[in-house]
Image 1 (cartoon, rainbow, N blue to C red):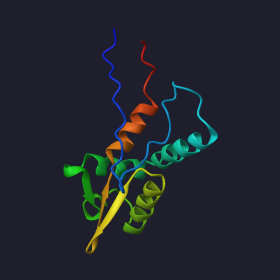
Image 2: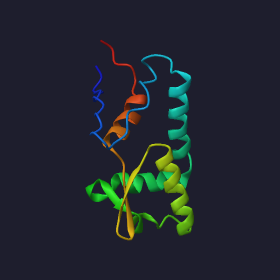
Image 3: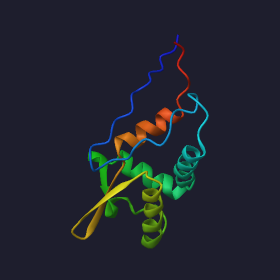
Image 4: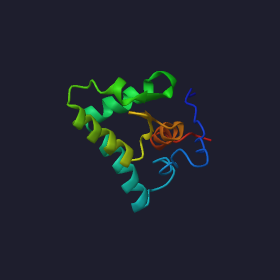
Length: 124
């Protein structure tokens, strides 16, 4: 008996959030478009600096992080900005400018969708 729980995908709030990219891998074969979207997400996370930045934002208190709080990842500030831009383009982060600083968030629907994508098939 498995203790695995399949969590439902969270629906994004109107005007914010990200629509889940694709169904779980075990549900059905992906379409070319779904595979392209998922590949962009995983490619963005395939870089160690991007993965650290994504983790820093996702684990930051309050669910969002100012760029000033997460930029110490061993690369220059312009490189941090480049990596954050790539994460945004892949649909993994959203951002909001507040005065001088930019705050980044990982939407719960993104984490739920990524988890569901890799979830094993649940026996009925």
